[in-house]
Amino acid sequence: MKVLRRCRKCGLEAIHKNDLNLFVIRRGRPYNRDTICKECFNSMKRAGGKYNSTEKRLKKKWNPIHTKRYGQRMYTFKDKVIRCDYVIRKNVCSECGKKYPEELDRQTVIHHDKYDKNNPLAHTRELCFSCHIKYHYKNGDIKGGRKKGFKHSEATKKKISESHKSVVTIMTKQQLKKLYVDNELTLTQIANKYNVVPSVVYQRMKALQIPRRKRGRKKL
Image (cartoon, rainbow, N blue to C red; front, side, top):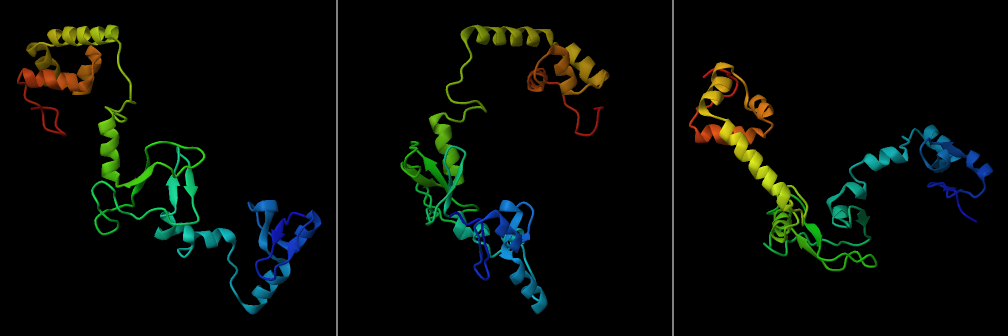
């Protein structure tokens, strides 16, 4: 028979649903009952002891979930957190050799060269945070905020280049001075008029040697 609830003080077990009436009500817990029976709860109250629910005990610092040692047993596998019964990390980077907490601000990352569903820890190595990002940049996994293998087609490249050229030729020095100096518009407002990014306007102003305003001031 399956045990529904067990008292952590006297070891009383609730096998049937009617036995759950012997346990303290606690909302949010399995079967809405806590892991302590009513007799033990009342005896603790009579003795003057403080009763801490399971939710309060989880928030305490001594709980192993919140300790650094328990953090060494955790790793991610395809955006899923997995906890082990034994320590996985040595907290030493395999690339630069730096240690935590002497030389590193955070713990090492468990990097997967290959993903194996049957054995999630296979083909893994420890890397620090900086070495982990450098590795993905070298392999092209992170490139300009886009995923690996992303490329514009030749037709879209031509359209982008033609639109930039046409916009840059339209932006003359007189027009930019009129908008930026006389009308006191910002770079984003000017960019919205030409349907471009503000960095294009900034580069064009830099090429035409138009001085920029100080931050917080509209006039030169």
